Structures are given as C-alpha cells and as structure tokens.
Length: 254
Image 1 (cartoon, rainbow, N blue to C red):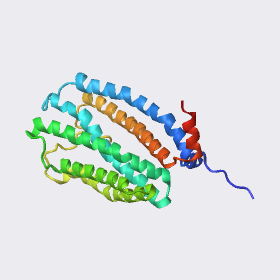
Image 2 (image 1 turned 30 degrees about the vertical axis):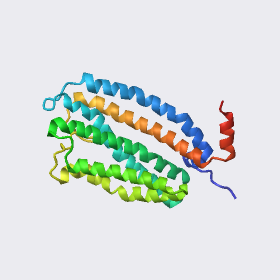
Image 3 (image 1 turned 45 degrees about the vertical axis):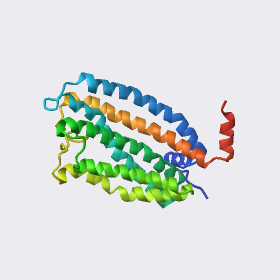
Image 4 (image 1 turned 120 degrees about the horizontal axis):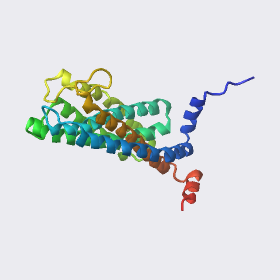
C-alpha cells in the first residue's frame, strides 16, 4: 500500500513546530532581519527628516508621520497576528504558536507606545494640546491596555501553556477593537486627520513625500520579524530547559 509524500511546504511547517528546528531557524534568520531593517530605517529617517520638502500647511511638524504612521500600522498588525497565532494554538494546541503569540505582545506594546508618544508630539503644535480624548487616540490607548493585559495575564499563571491559552483568548476577543481604530476617523467627528496614505488606491499625500514612508514601513516589518524570532527563541529555550538538545546547545557555546 503506497503512501503519498507530504508537500514540501507542509513538511517544512511540521518541522518548524519542532523546538530544536525552530531554535536553529530563529538563530539563523533573526540577525538577517535586523540587518535588513537597519539600512532601511537609516535611509527612511534621513530622507524623511532632511530630504523631502516641508508640508505646505503643517511645515516641518509633518515629519513626525514617518515614525508615527509605520508604528501605528504595526501596532494593529502585530495585535492581529498575535490573535491569529493564539487562535491556531487554541484550536490545534500547537505550542510554537503559543510562543509566537506571546512573543508578539511586548513588541506590539512598544509600537503602540511609540504611536501614542509621536501622536502627542504631533498634536501639540496642531491642536494646541498634548492629549485630547479623540476617538483615534482613545482607541489606540485601549489597544495598549489590551497588550498590557495579555502580558500581565501570561505572566500571572505559572503553567506556561495554560497562561498562553488564557492570554491568547484575551487577544482573540480584543481583535474586535482593530476595525474600530481603523475607521474611528470615519465614524466619529474626530480631531485626527482623515486617512491620507493608502497602501492600495490613491493617496492624498504628495508622491515626493511617500518614498521615505514606505522605507520605514519595510524597516519596521523586518525589525518586528527579527524581534519576534529572537523573543520566541528565548521563550522556547526557557520552556525546553532540561531537554537534551538544550543541554547540548549550552555545552557547544564557548
């Protein structure tokens, strides 16, 4: 009786779920992700801060968007990815997805803090105040609390797998906030300016100002990938402490 060999991609995903295999994968690719992010980050910041012309209405204050917008997009993207991993972990009990979901939380929280801080810096000259309970700002603040809730719940339970499942459930429930953040400037009368930059479709932002933004978007994606792999690898090693392959790995280090 002949058996059909699994597709190479399916086989690779099964291998990736193995803790030793994932450790080797993360150790190999995390540095490359950081290496790819750094030149993009440097070039994007240099062009955004010194090369593109000032905005005809906001002057040089608009340059904060080259940090604010990529961070805001990442704050929502990372939460959605965390919920996706958590859903897979809850349904199929895949330990690696639990690890990846929990590794997303502190990185997404950092992007959310950057979003709120740069939004306040931009708001001071534009609105005359550091903070206003604007729908976009308020929902972004709630997103930060959700990230902190996931992190707190994960660290409050001793059993790592039970902790990941409980925190993952909170992430899945919290994902309902993402469309509210996205469309808050459309649904409510908001001080926050409407959407001027679109990944698909025509943007109202001048084409000469867009290149640094997309460089920063790519840079944050690569930085996130490197950070995710590094944090997930560390958590994976903590969970597997005492296993033979971890002992051999520790013994191989100088």
